[in-house]
Image 1 (cartoon, helix red, strand yellow):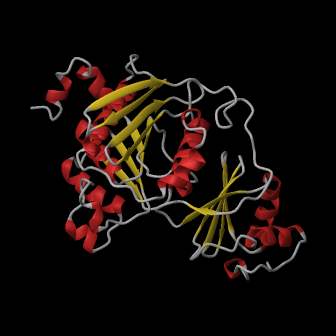
Image 2 (cartoon, rainbow, N blue to C red):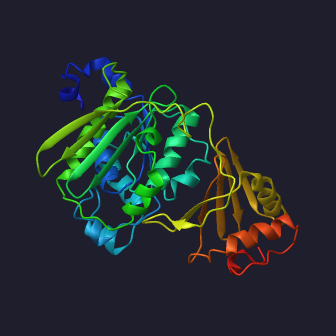
Image 3 (cartoon, rainbow, N blue to C red):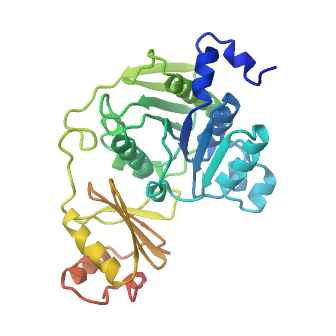
Length: 347
C-alpha cells in the first residue's frame, strides 16, 4: 500500500496535492519544541527535502516538550539538528535532510536550494526579524508560530503582497527583551500549535487558494479557546514598505535570549570601513543581498543593510563604550584597534 494512502484519500490533498508535497523543499529554522514536532510532521507528510537550522544542543529540560530527542542526546549534548536528522531519517530515509548546526543569521550566507516555504520555529524576535527580511528579499512565504505558557500564536505570511511579521509586531524589539524572561510552557500546547502550523504549510505547498495571508491566530489550550484577528499591511513598515528605514546611530548591544549572539544598531555608513578593516586583517568576507558577514579569527559580525548588527563569539558582553571606540579607531585609520574590549585587539 502507498505510504501516503490515507493522506491522499483526503479530498483537500488528493494525488495531485501529494505529488506537489513530494517535490517541495522546506527550510525549518529552530529545532526545539515547535521545530521538532513540525519536522516530524513534514517528513511523515512526504516532502522532498527538509533543511534544519539550529545552533543549540539537546538538554535534559528539553525532553519535556520537544519531540525526536531522547535522554542519550541530552547526556551527550548532541546538536539538535544532528539528533533530529538521525530520527527523521529512520522515519523516512527517502526524504533528503540537511542539518546546519549554526545560527540562521549565518545560514543566509549559504547558497540554499530553491525554497518553497520557511517555517519560523524560533524562540526570539531577533531571529524572526531576520527570517522576515530574508523571506521578503527572496520572495518566499513563511509561517510564524510561537508558544508561551498555555498560549500559542501563528500566522502565514507571503512577502511583498500582504502584511509581514513587522506589520504584526511593530515593537518586536521590546517584545524580544520581554521574551528573554524564562517562560513556562504546557507540554500539550506544542503539538496543537505545530499541527495548525503544518496544516497551513500543507495549504501553501499544494497551492490551496483558500489560505488567508491576513489572519493572525491565537489559541489558549487551558481555556480551550481559539480566536483569529485580521491584520492589515502597514504602508510605512520599515521592512516591507517601498521606503526602508536604516540606522544612522550606534546602539548599545543586547544579548539575544537563549543564544550567544549580541544584537545592536550601527550607522550604515560604517559598513565600507568595517569591510576594509576585515580585508586589512586577512578576514573572511561573505556578501549577500541582505548584507555582509565579516569573520575576524573567532569573531563573526553580520551587518544588515537596514542597520542591524549581530555579533557572534563574544565570551562576555562588551562595555557600552567599547564599540563607539572601536568605530572611532577605524575612522581614524588605525592599523590596530585600540579599545577596552580586547576581543577586537590584534585581529
